[in-house]
Every structure is written in C-alpha cells, then in structure tokens.
Length: 491
Ligand SMILES: Cc1cc2nc3c(=O)[nH]c(=O)nc-3n(C[C@H](O)[C@H](O)[C@H](O)COP(=O)(O)OP(=O)(O)OC[C@H]3O[C@@H](n4cnc5c(N)ncnc54)[C@H](O)[C@@H]3O)c2cc1C
Image (cartoon, rainbow, N blue to C red; front, side, top):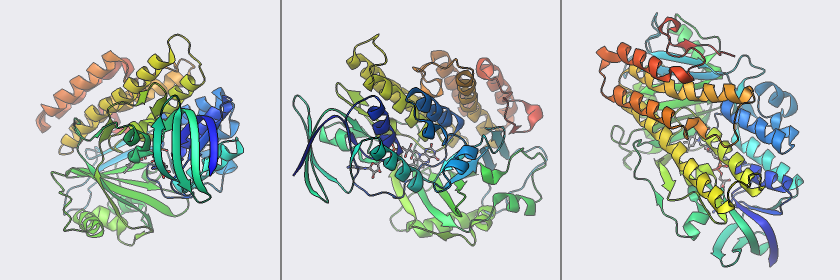
C-alpha cells in the first residue's frame, strides 16, 4: 500500500486541476494529484478567449511561471510549444442558417455577426487541443514536484480532522491524507458525491444537450462563403480562425479548427426542438442535422469523424455549493451551462486565480472560511449571469437582429474587463463577466427582458435600447449600425 500525507489533494488532472496543483507547489504546499484516466486523453472545451489568456498571464506573473505565459497567445505558443497542438482564434463569428436552403450572404450582414478579439495572429487567441495541452500541464505538474497518480479509481473519501482518500492505482492501493481537497473532476464531481452534495440540473433558464466529435477534412467555411457569393462586409480575420457559430432552428453548432488537421465540431440543441430520442443514434442524428442545412452539409460533406459522436445529457448542472471549510470545487466541477460564447475556460481560470489566493493566504482581510464562502457564491453567480444571456440567445435564435443585440452585453463585459486588466486596473477579486457588478447585472436583465418582449419589427429599436443600456461598459464601439455587424478589434 502506498501511503502519503499532503497539504492539498487535487482530484482530476484536467488543465484546471493540474494548473491548481502547479500553483499550490509554487505556494510551497505539498500536493497529490489524482486522475482516473491517462494522458493524453480526449477532452472537450477548447475555444479560449482574451479574458482566459489574460488570466493565464496573470497567473504566470503572480506565481512566477514564465512558461505559462507563452501559452497565452498564438504566436508564442507556436514558437515555444510546436509539439502542443492548438488552433488560431481571432474572434467570434455567427451565421444564421435556414433549413433546406444555402446560407445567403447579404449586403448588410443581416444574418451574420463578426467580433474580432485580437489585433493580429501573433497576439491571437487559441483553440486548445486539450489532449496535448492537458498532457503538457501534467508533465509540468510532475516537474514542479506534484505527486501524481493516474489510472486511479477513488474508493472512499472520508473526513475526520483531515481528509482521507483510499483508492486503487496500477501500483496497488493508495491511502492518502490531506488538509484540503480540490475537486477538479468536472462533470463527475467526485468529492461532491462523496460528501453528499447534490448536483442539480434544474433551476436553469437554458436547456440544451450536446452532440459533438472531432473530424478531419472539414472544408474551410471561407471557401463555402466564397462559393455562396461572399459576405459584402468582410471582417478583418478569417471565419476559419474563429469560434465559428452556425445558428440553426433550436440550437447552434461550433466549429473550431486546430492546426493539426483536426476540427472540433458540435451542436448544442434545445431538447424541446430536437428531442434526443434513443431511437436515433448520435451518428444518424448528426447526419440528419448537417444534411438539413445545405451549407453546413457542404462544409461537412467529406468530413471523417476521428471518434464516435458523443451525445450528452442535459449540459446544465450545478452543485449546491462550490466550497466548504476545507474543500473547493473548481468552476467547471461546480457548475456548467453551455459552450455558447465560450465562457468555460475563462470562468475556470477566474476560479483558479481566486482559489490560489485563498490557498496562499494572499488576503487576510477575512477568515479563510469566509473567503471560501465568497468563492462559492461568486462561482455560482457567474454561471447564473451566463444563464440569463444564453437562455435569451437560445430563445431568440429565431430573429438574428435580436440575437445580435443580446450578445452585446456579453461582448461589452468581456472587452471592458480586458481593457481594465491590460491597463493594470483589474482587481484580483473581480468576478468573471462583471457578475459581481449589480448595475451590469441589471443591464443584462433589462436587455434580456426587452429581447423576449420584442418582435422582428422592434429589433432596430431593441438595438438602440441595448446600445444605450451598455454604454457605460461599451468601450469598443459595439451596437453601431454603421458597422453592419462587423466589430474590429479596438485596442
Ligand atoms: C460540450 C462542451 C463544449 C465546451 N466548449 C467550450 C469552449 O469552446 N470553450 C470554453 O471555454 N469552454 C468550453 N467548455 C467548458 C470546458 O470544457 C471546461 O471549462 C473545461 O474542460 C474545464 O476543465 P477542467 O480541467 O476543470 O475539467 P475537465 O477537462 O473535465 O477535467 C476533469 C478531469 O478529471 C478527471 N476525472 C473525472 N472523474 C474523476 C475521478 N472520479 N477521479 C479522478 N479523476 C477524475 C477526468 O478524467 C479529467 O481529466 C465546454 C464544455 C462542454 C461540455
């Protein structure tokens, strides 16, 4: 039997668990990291954002991890880590499709939206090829002195004065004690279930499930746009170097291209509109969806899946608490909503930063117990705000002009935060997406309520109202009708 005693025990070696382990080592803590799988392994959740990258930079600076900063932009990533695959992400693109007919670019971009997120490729964001990236972080964790056990099955987690974990790994039985446990096991919620915390999938406005895979030979969307006559107002970046969103009736599809020839693609679907009946296999459902939308079908006509198509249950889930006296769940373990607008990695990294400060005793203004309570409340509040925006977007997939307005508070919040952080004005307590800012939350509420009460005829009025509402946070010229839904990066 292998026995050990640690300051911190981290369950789950996804990028977030490994990064937390590395930081805990930098704080001088002894750390054990437990993974049930073995790297490299597939993981979903790949499209990063400027805020996520600013968080990586902030963690790199605070904890003296210069190698981590090289992952925060496309140029340095490719130069320093050519062996870790990624894709270039210069922004967000959205295209509204109609069943049975090809996508039709229009002179005023009435069915497309482009938001640039970085000034050039060198400083571009990335899609993380998680198999490589997560494996790399585990190697870094081991180098940093983390005691790592993979292919490990947790049997019990008990708590008396300290935590006690018993598990089985390939070398035999494990018996580990620790003062603090971090649950980074994602949807599994290993600690949460061991201590009897309830995971709920109710109480959300958003309702969606996923259908996704990795593919080779996906045609560039720009090629198809060109075949279709091209968009009249073109963005300053390629739609294939973006988080490409195809919007369909009752759902949307992400398409994220990596440099290694693999493309991540998936649908997030409203179960009311797309019942996930067991009678149709995930493969058949995938084929039916891409065939229903001819331009998407064209993009995927020669595509070959590199893995079986995955169909999930409801994506929305939340624990009743994200932390207790001597434990914490990282954000993706505590809750998840939907990949719409790619909030997941940034949300996770905001949580890692806050938890690292608590573990390191960086803030002595409140007892640790209180700081953990605030951590828990903040993580759950952040997802609540995303829920408000995402559910309204889903509800307004029927009218692109209204949908575009509903995305604007999201883009205003992230760009406002990015600017503050770049200007050195960011506060380490700041919540993701201004979720701790009551005034901003009220703005989101107002825009979402108005969007639900507006019909297509009122869409232009809603756009004007949204522009006025987000004005205090709109530092980059969003909601400008003269831009025809093309928002270049504004430094
Ligand atoms: C369909 C979908 C699409 C997404 N797309 C995006 C996106 O484009 N952009 C974005 O920002 N976010 C996205 N996300 C969210 C993103 O996946 C998460 O933010 C991210 O994976 C969090 O990383 P993590 O390390 O916390 O968890 P994970 O990546 O889930 O890692 C958890 C680890 O724990 C291990 N584990 C599980 N159970 C146990 C156990 N019992 N014992 C030990 N180890 C265990 C797993 O093997 C895994 O290695 C998406 C999520 C989903 C579901």
